[in-house]
Image (tube, rainbow, N blue to C red; front, side, top):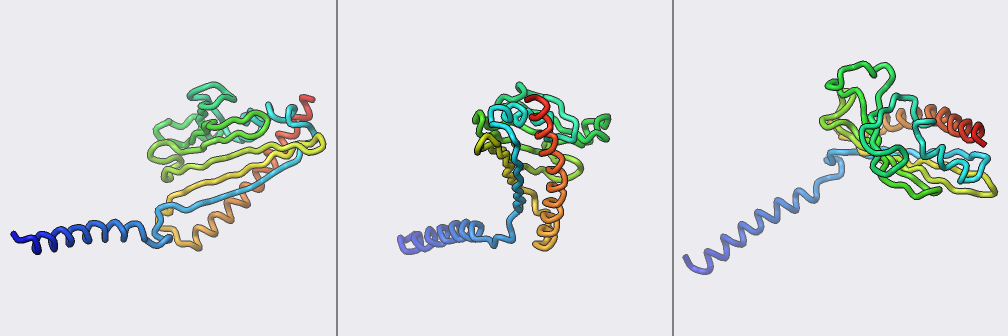
Length: 195
């Protein structure tokens, strides 16, 4: 086979391979398999950080309106994992996967902690697998502590349209707003009761 024919074959294979790679990399953003959901909330507690921190870090005392059970690690330490279940589902067979997990992945004492929230392998609550990161940041000003939540989630698109995703995210934000009114109040009450 002469050099000219070999060069054309190699060039053709190269273009076919890299052309497919480039097409895969340049898909339209609407073809993405996942979409994002973000949420922010904050509260001010009339106490210094060192009084707020231990209660904030112990999320079992205030963040949860659900049942929690340690499955790995030590409470308040990086690596601690809890199975989180709605009270009405506690007696369900675990094979139904009516629960999710929280894992403490970062702790900077008196400053911030991050929870990774994730579904069981194969999904939880009858839905697909998903994951979020809940970062709680504490700052102090004049003896008062601001506790902020920065929530970032990624969910499978599952064929949802942009309008469906937007409507779902707006509904989720409203639900979070209602829940965090209660959560922040629980945290404030814990701090006040222990000072």
